[in-house]
Length: 118
Image (cartoon, rainbow, N blue to C red; front, side, top):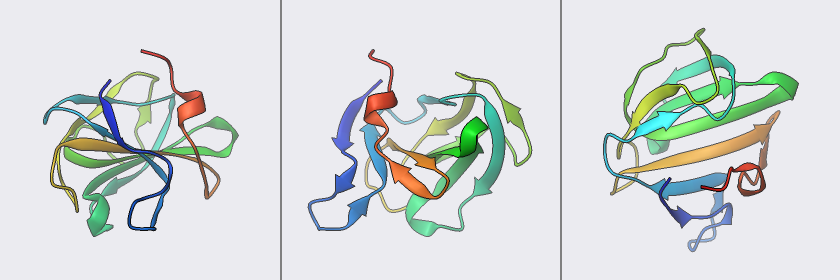
């Protein structure tokens, strides 16, 4: 839950946004969108700050960026809805938020049609 502050597609500066950005209070629980295996936890991609990638059945991958703290590690198996991190403003953002991406293989997919209505 939160206000979408950047939609999937082109941003105002013309750069692509491969996911959505949702404004949330710092420390908000971030939940896994679906069951899967954690394939990456780290901050090597500086713009994304503390990032978690989860691989799901069918070649799907979800990404959760700008976390303050992370509660999973590479190799962990997670359940749908499990808390994986706490939202923050790590990386290149100036307010607490979650950047969420959905990918089929390496291709970004607009996550909005897959989101549950809250």
